[in-house]
Amino acid sequence: MHTETSIYDSHRREGNSDLIMNELSRTSLDPQDTKTIHNAWKSIVQKYFIRSPLSWRKINRQETYEVSLLEESLKTILSQKCGRTAFRDFLKAEFCEENLDFWLACQEFKTCDSPDELTRRAARIYEEFIRDESPRQVNIDFCTREIISQSLQQPSPSCFVVAQKKIYGLMENGSFPRFIQSERYRYKQRGQTQSTLPLTQNVTVTT
Image 1 (spheres, rainbow, N blue to C red):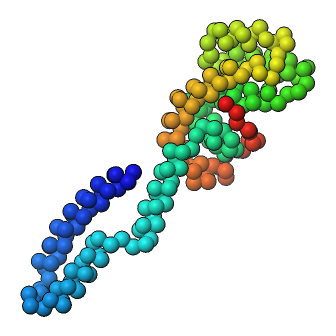
Image 2 (cartoon, helix red, strand yellow):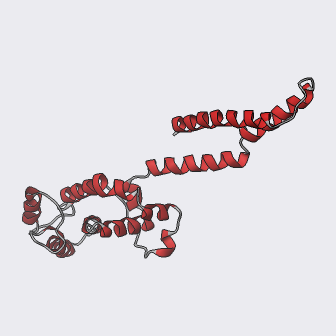
Image 3 (cartoon, rainbow, N blue to C red):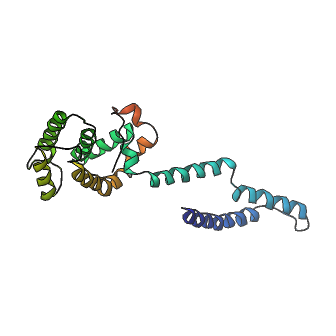
């Protein structure tokens, strides 16, 4: 970022030098009047080389914004209500919103403390996302699918952990890089998503 800015400033200064020479050539100056020449140079330098504090503040805001784009992670997005909503909307446009829905279902599943509730929810998640040819089947390998199938008789809060991590990896390395380049992400950054999209509950992200 700073290298690009330096290159830009270098080209800008070179271009400004041409402008200065053109402007001086149009100005009638007495070679003996050093004071007038000095004031003319000072005026031109201020005009073409010195940026106002407002310009610097604008550049600093832009640099801060671009750094924030680089530092934001999928974990951060999923921990925010508006972030999850914006990301799901993006996934829906890519026809893979089931990945996020499965991940969220697994997060909720791990909070169950009743054996009966664990069994019911495990069966529901398996039928919707895991079973071969299920309506919203997520992309996991055969071995992981079989292990989950065998654990359904006595499911534990961790029976979907491996599959959840695999789907998180798919989102992090596949959809997420495209998401942060999208208009939907830019709307979220400007705070517009909160007022234009439905919100979901807070989620504690563990990966």
